[in-house]
Length: 503
Image (cartoon, rainbow, N blue to C red; front, side):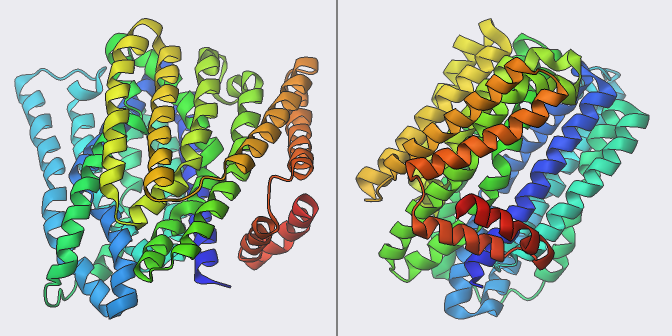
């Protein structure tokens, strides 16, 4: 089994753990707390994501880009020393949000201006947000070191442990202590990856000035891209919704976002191994292999993401109230838009990994800059007057423009052909999948209809993909290889299904 296939499989398992963990966590919070408190928790988690993005300085992703190159050229020991050298200043910066959160909480208590109904006026939640930013940032560093070592099996184990602990802690924390307990549960789970840092904290060796210079430039653009990308790809809409419509609207929008992530995050994590692989191929000047990997990766990701997105959008009118409760039924129209839009963003991730592997983080920065400007305009023009539906439309339009700019750069400037024909055939097959599922639910609504609609849509999709010839022989061979690379008990059961679906 090739290392790339093995990394892809374990990256996918890690992605599934993250997706299921976040999905079940959202269900626990929504069911135990209700719409407005769930919105309060979502707003606190959003603040943690924003703070972590700022504190990271682009370094964790930069490590994942350069450690494979240094390890392949100079040996794993030199790569380890490089990670150790960077951990010390990173840890010094990462601890600042925890100190700041404690200081702000003390000011709220001393000034007697605290308000437990608002996340940013509750001293306990403010302290937890600051502490969570610190542990999340250090955890990102640790996971990036593992990815840089190609230790994707360790990433998968760490992610599964985090997800399990988070769900258990939420059941206890939210059930006993409400919003504060829920935010504390997220913080508790974020400690899991930090055990890796014990291995990283070691001798730093001599400074590698040439590599560090390249890393600094890459990290600066990456950091700026991450901050701008937060406006484009993360949940910046939550801020506008909270300001204009309140925490109830945030709770509804977050439910739709959770389901959109559920549709795409599993397949999306197949791309975790792509950036280190593109970096290696770039270092070897193997452009032909990069061309093939980009085209194949894009087709395979579309093959998995399109039916998941359009199929889920078709069954949401029955599925969302069943999962979250009737109080969240108002989230259905926006959730359908979000789920469909997520597929476009997910498929573009192969090209994003290629751009990063080619050390063109500057191009990602400019695409993110344009998208961020559109996101801010959408927040004023669409979200303030139209609420959740305006937020979903703003997100879809912003991401479509950002993907268009990135795709143009790949094609026109870097010379990588986008497999447009295959993508259109897969898109058509996915539309048929969603149409059949929606038709079944129109005839038989409810749980029984769902039980029939989902397999009916899946069968339609497989038949349409074969009829349209959307996948090449090399694509199916790679999918069989991914199944074979799964742990043996899973592979043994999955192989007959893969042969039935793929031929």
